Amino acid sequence: MENIRISVEDISITAELLDTPTAQKIIQSLPLEASVNTWGDEIYFDVPLNLELEPGARADVEVGELGYWPSGPAFCIFFGPTPMSTGEKPRAASEVNIFGRVIGDSTILKSVRRGATISITEAD
Image 1 (tube, helix red, strand yellow):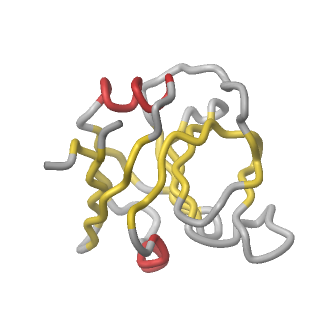
Image 2 (cartoon, rainbow, N blue to C red):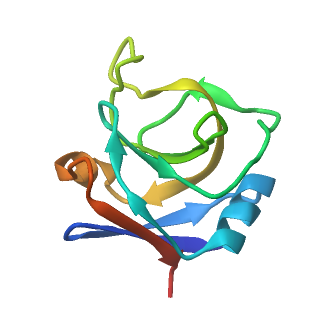
Image 3 (cartoon, one colour):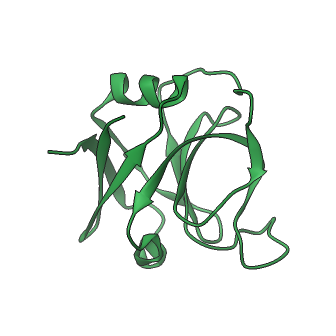
C-alpha cells in the first residue's frame, strides 16, 4: 500500500498504510488538514468520511497505529496510554478501523498541543 506524511508543528513523520478499505478512502481524501485534538497520548482530528467499522476493528491498539473512529468521524494516531488504558498500551474510546502504522518513533508526538494544525499528504 502507500505511505503518507504526517506534519504537525515542527514534526514530520511517515506512516505506512495497510491494504484496507479505510486506508483506500483515506488516500482518496488527501490532502487533509485539521485542528488537533488530544486524548491522553492520542491525537485525533475530524475527517470528511463516513465509513463503517470493518471486520477486525478493535479498541485495544498498539503504539504507532493509525485508526479511523466512526463515531467522530476521526483519524486517530496512538502513541501511548489514553484515559481508557489500563496499562502502557493505548486503548481507543471505542472500536476503530486500524488502517496504518507510523514508521519509526511515534512518541515524538507527545509534544503536540491541542489546536495545532496537522496535515496529511501522500509521501514522496
